[in-house]
Length: 209
Ligand SMILES: Nc1ncnc2c1ncn2[C@@H]1O[C@H](COP(=O)(O)OP(=O)(O)OP(=O)(O)O)[C@@H](O)[C@H]1O
Image (tube, rainbow, N blue to C red):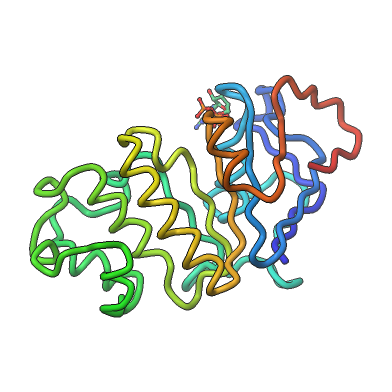
């Protein structure tokens, strides 16, 4: 279970709370949608759950254990722009290896061509790069995947291909997922449950999302 308990976060003491005293749980294999207006803290919440940001208060745990301070994190995040996570100077093979071995079966599952492995990120399309970024983080150590607007910039056919491939792996490996999207139809179609933070007012009391 991925559990965030009573987490609060603000970017500075002088800034308002982005999240305050929030508790949320994602079970293995569960697909949870996160919906809210722009700027309401969806990405910030995901970054806290993945250990990119430390909450000012509260804890994030996976199976009762805090996220590791070094080594592979069981909570992985995929972003809207895959080029921001792939080193522009490395060939794709090296970027994949950085996160662990990617077996041929996973390359095939995400329709990644072997010839792409020798290319640099700028030599691939946005949809191809996103499939690489997703395949890269679906290794054995990943228990939860946080997907932040990962298909927003892609055409409808590519969106379906990506979600079909991703959800199949998540189901097979019992990986829990959080889907951040402004696309209400997408969330409704693929998620078991939806957390809606649209218009949420943080007043300090316990909030279970
Ligand atoms: N590094 C930062 N320093 C200060 N404020 C920040 C920082 N990063 C984000 N914010 C602010 O925190 C708030 C929440 O941002 P966040 O990116 O989490 O929202 P979001 O719900 O994901 O938005 P969107 O749907 O537009 O992607 C916004 O008001 C944003 O301006």
